[in-house]
Image (cartoon, rainbow, N blue to C red; front, side, top):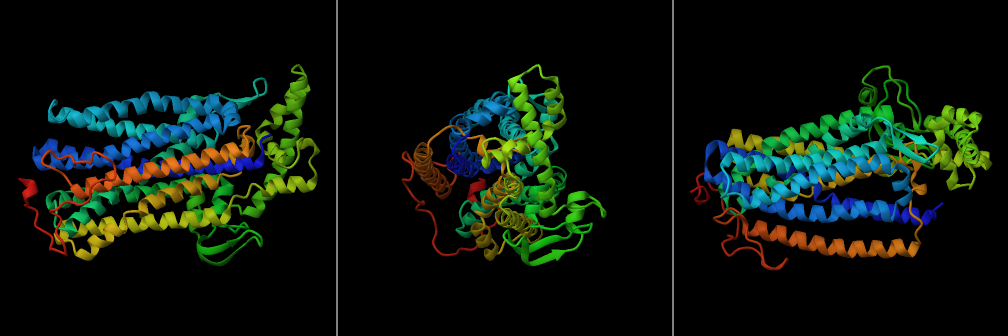
Length: 539
């Protein structure tokens, strides 16, 4: 058993690296698809303006891609350094999607990125566009296999515990791949990345229009971002609804925490718009409800029941008691592998072994657990309700906000043919929000799963490596300093490229050293009116 403080610190360290890594992933996913669209316009029209637009946004994609790769590698290392028992226990299942991601997706993406940047004058227009498509395909395949691995952690299917090896082993790899939780998470997460990129392109282009610079690039980019953003934001919302339904089927504690729903309501349950969850009193104060909505989302019916936290805890208590029997049978099998009675008992109760292991947080041998300790283990299955509740609502609010923003941008560009300056300022100010929504979504998904690292199978506190507190603290400080420096470098390069804008070749000129250089001398002061479509950039 690892030190509980070590397990908690390891969780904080992984959260730090994951949240940081996820600053780069959404933009990489979204920009890769937008490059396909922009270069597709170049292939179809033959206009050099689209070539230069594509090359400019490719510059920003490249900077972001490099930092995403660098930060993603350290995350995978942590499975061996900080979560070694996890890697031992489920490595046969969890390791396969990650290995396929490296072989199928990362190698494809990283190879084609180089061809995309250096192959403009060496390939035909359709040929180079196909390379850009492969870059986007690699980015999205990478997300697919990683989310298959994460989806299995949320809903472990296609695998069973083997008492001979004391590990989880794959029984049906197709069930792992086509896990409904993984598929819903993939489309939802990728769509969120598309929204992030569309918001980024919209915001940067608006900044150019406010300064009357690169107007041809800005207006065309806004047209692409608005249309692409509407579809992406709608997809995020629709797939978010699908995720709610899947949580209602497979992760009932998470759904109840998201809704801060303490008691089971008569079907169909109401949706809590806002309130103040109070775990101590088991009540959500000042709650504002919308009748029927939660029941429709979670059960797709008017008579399906959504269980509250209190009833789920009672059910969990019974599963923990059954899990004690599974643990006892497993110990008897370890002592005598030929004990057929123990094997039969284990096969009858093995699905609840994970719930029995929850007791090891309170007692060394679950068979010696008291009634009070069983109650404590059952209550530990309630995640951080307040964090899950508010993170989810902030994420949803940003999603709907950006659907309105993209629709408004599309209306101004295609109907009014004129964008007011107030909207341009709003678009610039809102650039950080999609990143915030993506991080909040990750928090909702991962905090809502606790105390499990593999839902229903392995408690998080059991999965950590046998490290000391000082070792984890030192590495956490190191990660923070290195990542902080990398963030400064990345932001300096991105801001310099944006201020510089595209050159005649299309690529933005970067400084020799990160962080050097500022805006260009041709940046006008004040608030000049937005120029018409035909500009010097188009020539």
